[in-house]
Amino acid sequence: MSSALELPWSLIEEASQLYRCAQDADLIRGRSVEMIAAGSLYATCRRRGLPRPRDEIASVARCSCDQVQTGYRALNSELGIDAQIVTARTYVTRLGSESELSSRVQSRAYELATSADEEGITNGRNPAGVAAACLYLAGTEFDVGPTQTALAALADVSVPTLRARYVELTELA
Image (tube, rainbow, N blue to C red; front, side):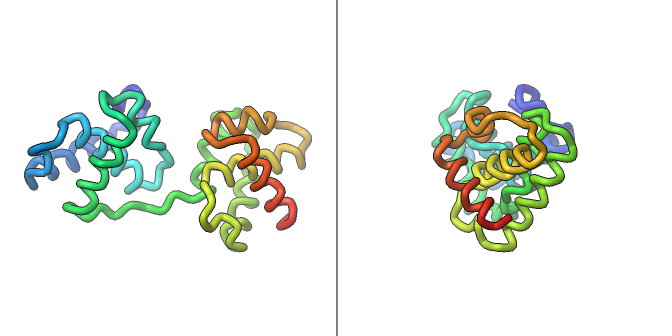
């Protein structure tokens, strides 16, 4: 799974160690091995603050998105995983590189995401949608960048969601 997602070796080792801890704690009994392995990978990504959606992990695992979540919950409740909060700033970096935007646009989008966090705009919002809106706004400021549709597809949010976050950000800026 991790090679299909092109994850770093250190993250793979950490996920393997988490899986072994789950095995020692007898969490696998009565559960799918693939579900716990996928849950371990998702938990490790969360622990490091890397934005990897459950459906992305489920796409390379032999289990559903719900099973990835179930595996993660079992690990979290029994082993007490210290998961980092995924913010819009973490998504800005990933989505910016995937959309091949310049570092200048990505830097401005990061500033916008930081301001949005400080102003509380991101509270209760999908961080990927906020990040996509930050990238779109930064792109429009420099007259470059992908369309709302392209960024919404990358962030796995709807265009109206991106547009609503964009409107909120323009009021902030």
